Image (cartoon, rainbow, N blue to C red; front, side, top):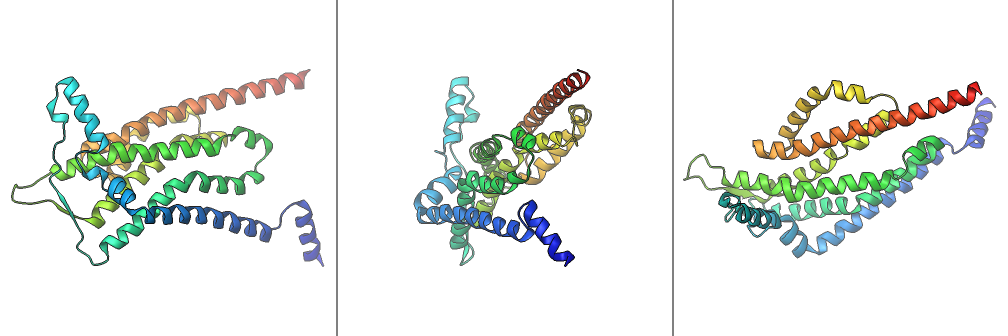
Length: 284
């Protein structure tokens, strides 16, 4: 009897636990369907996705290399022109090319569908927020999607070609030829792009931690040096073992860390103004 009464009260107050699970299931199904849709489209467009996107950074006519060469010609620095990438890509496993075709299609599908995927997640989370929290998080889908796609573009056009150029030209001895397996190549590329996209979410993390009061701008400033060390360590883990790649991913993350400090300051000022208004109205 008491159990039935509790259940009735729960349903009167809002959705039951099972209703929440059902809603979550449909949100996840729609999100996964979007990823699968773009993945299938990428799988069908093999010539463009694999021939142009995936293998693009392995060719000397890639956009980044051409821009660097133009910059080198303008500055009179011939070293910036990359006229050769001394390596070949091979498939040493019978299922290597097919499995990498599947993997690359899924990664492209995930990146393309990310704005919709996050929108579905946000639609599930937002009804549980207070009106104040909803107002503060307005535009979250656009902001998170922008940072994710910006990170993916940075990883693809900056981090990946620089890493590939370093690794392709690194030799212990002239007699050793660089012959990379397709699995290693695709795994390195996807890891760099996705890791960069995730790392670019730092301002979002700082924003919500600051909203909850767990992080302050003073705390971020105090632990700035510690954060720099952590960022450099993480950059070293997710990038190939060369200083250039580590600095390429670390520098924008450090900039985003400083942006996070500014965001925290702004939230603190808004909170202080609201508190002052509340105290003034209370005294009146």
